[in-house]
Amino acid sequence: MRKEEIQELIRLVEESKISELEICEGKRKIRIAKGSTAASARMAASESPGESPSEEAYALPVNREEAPKLASNLKQIVSPMVGTFYRAPAPDADPFVEVGQAVQTGQTVCIVEAMKVMNEIGSDYSGVIRKVLIDNSEPVEFGQALFLVETK
Image (cartoon, rainbow, N blue to C red; front, top):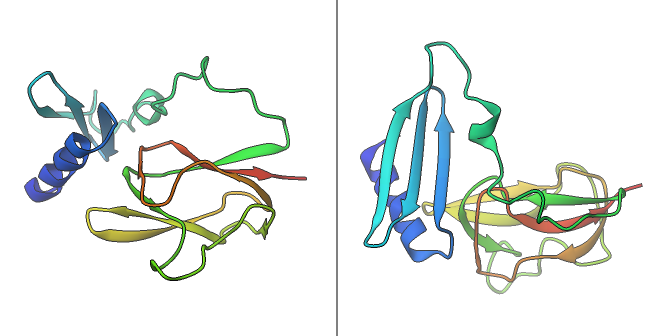
């Protein structure tokens, strides 16, 4: 990851409501956490060469014990990155999906803007959108639930 990308991530963390961000790329891990004075970043190599990052490195920032229990047919579409959530492709356009609308696996449901790149987010499930969990133009965290989808 380039210095400019790391600085942009630090800026995003400082300006958002999140307190910590961790990203793994190959053997490198970047963790950015808000401190009492400023965000700090540290980069570390993985534990041993050739070893893939541990499962813990990809853990969601949500305490699983505090997460609400969902019905077995309700699935969450989560953000794969930190950024800004947009429901539509443009400010004056209709949203990609509405509550009650059927979606297919891979169908675009929103955009998450990260580092000035618009990333289309596809549904992980086929089903019906039951709830939009984030307001338009709100910051989102890695692993944060965006939509609830009722599957069959």
